[in-house]
Length: 294
Length: 290
Image (cartoon, rainbow over all chains, first blue to last red; front, side, top):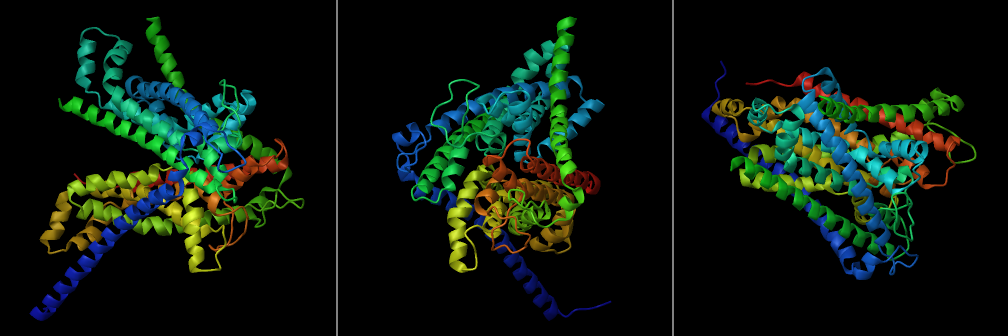
C-alpha cells in the first residue's frame, strides 16, 4: 500500500484547490464572454441605428437615398405574412396536438407523427422556402404573394406550436377529463369545454414563440422568391411583398454610406417587436403557473 | 354520432398534414434533383471540387460548397462548444439558484435574435476587428461568420447540456464529495460523464443547426465557392449558394435553377442524419438513475 507523507498530501490538496478555483474562473469567464458579446451586440446596434429612427423612417418606402429610406413596406409585409403564418400554424398545430394527445395517444401513428415532428424542427429553414416555392408559388399558383409567404412560414413554425400545445394539453389534470366523462360528456365536449380552455395560455405562449420565430426569418422567404424592393404596401393576400428582415439584409449588403445605419435602425425596430412579443409570452406563462397554484 | 366522428377525422387530417410536409419536402427536392442528375453525373457532383454553375463553363463539384459549410460549422463549434459547456457547468454546478434563473433566460436571448441581425454584426463589427488584427483577412471570410454563428448556437449547447447535467441525481455528487472530491472534480469526473448522452446530443443538434444556418454566412462569408479550409478568404456555403441563386434572375427549369434543389437535397440529408443521430445518442446512451 502506498503511503504518502503529510507534506505531499497538503501539497496535493493545495494544488487541487487551486485548479478548482481556476476551473471555476474559467466557467465564470465563459458565461461572462457570452453575456458580454450579447451586450456588445445590442449596444453596437443602438449606437449605429438609434439616431436614424424617426416617424419618417417608419412611414417611408425604401429609397435609393439612404437618408430617405424607410421600412413601411417591410413592416406591413412582415405583419401581414406573420398574421397568416400565425393563424395557419395555430389552427393546424392545435388540431394536431389535440389529435396526438387526446385522440390517438400511445398509438403507432402518434409515435411516428412525433418523431416526424421532431425531425421537421431540425430541417434548415431555407429548405422550407424551397418547399414553399414549389408547392405554394408554383403548383398552387399563389405567386410570390403574402399568402404563399405566410403558408411557408406556417409550415416552418408548425413544430414549435405542436410541441408547445402538446405540452399544454398534457399538463391538464386527468381528473378534469374524468369528471366530465363521468357526467356523460363526449370526447369532443371534454376537449372543447375542459382541455382547450385549461391549456389555452400554454398554447398561446407557444404561438407567440412561433410567431416571433417567423417574424425574424429571412432565408425561407428569399428562397420562396419574396421581393427585395417593394415601393407599395400589400393590398390583398395575393399581393407581392417584402418583409423587414429582407429589407435589413438588402441594406446590409449595400456598400453605400448610410444604408448600414438604416439597416441598424431596422434591426432595432425588429428587436423591439420581438421584445414586446416575448414579454407577452413570459407574462402568459406566469399567469398560467399561478392559475395552477391558486 | 356524426359530428364527433367528423371532428376526429378533421383532427386526424391536420395531424396527417405534418407527415405530408416531410413527404412534400422529400418529393420536391427529389423531383428536381433527379432531373438535375439526368444532366449532371452524380459522381462528378459528389466528388468534384469546382463549383461554377453560374459561369459559362459549368462545373458541378459540390465539395467546394461542402468545404465552406464544413469550415464555418467546425469553427462555429470551436467557439460554441467550450463556451457552451463551461457555461452549462457554471449554471448547473456553481451558480446559486437566483443567478441561474436570471442568467439562463438572458443567454437564451442569443438564440432568439434573428440570424440576419447576426449577419450584420459579423460583417460590420467582427470583420473590421479581425482585419485590424491581420491584414491577410478578406472583407468576406469564414472566420467572422463562424465566430458569430458560434455565439448564436451557444445557448443551444449550454441550455441543453445544463438540462442534462441537472438531471444527474444529487446522490452521485454527494458520493464523490464524501470521497473528498473538489467541486471541479465532481463536475468533470461525475456530472459530465453522467450527462454525456445529453451533452453529445446537444452538440450534434448544434452542428446541424450550424450547417443549416443561412443568413450569417450569406452576409459575412462571401459567395466564392473556394475548395479551401482557409478561414481568412471568402467562401460559399451550401445555404449561401441557394440564397445567391434565389436572389438572382435564374430562369426556373434551367440547369442553374435545378442545382439549388440538388444542393438542398444534400443539405436536407446531412441535417436529417445528424438529427436522427442526436435522438439515437439520447435514447441509446442515456444513463438511467433512479
